[in-house]
Length: 168
Image (spheres, one colour):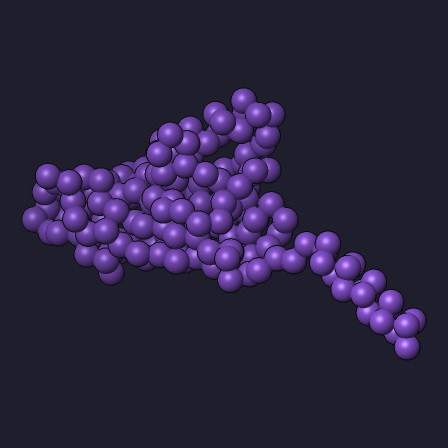
């Protein structure tokens, strides 16, 4: 009986020192917001609103070709600041943006999980020409997030929302 109790205690001690990951905590929040809208132009920004820092992310950005014409899709100031932070810490980052297709594919991979540097959280910036006199609507642009993972290859659940309030 003493042997069984000793083995049970040893097993519990081993389990108490093993790291366990909780997948429910691996979530990330993004918002697509209007940075600027005029009668004929629209600038959208994809913001990282917090959560688990991602080390890999693919985003397909589809847009209505009748109402919008993509002028540019580029790294946002937040991602540029993060790349500078990575370089200063001898870490790596790869970012690929395919502007020539609809959907636009944005792929990112970092050796350190993404975080907003100095509060700057904009990951991607999109500039469109739009049909004059129209107002941007959620259905004009859709996003599909895939391959969102941590540096340890743990899948991250992506939460996404639109902010339709243009700055005045």
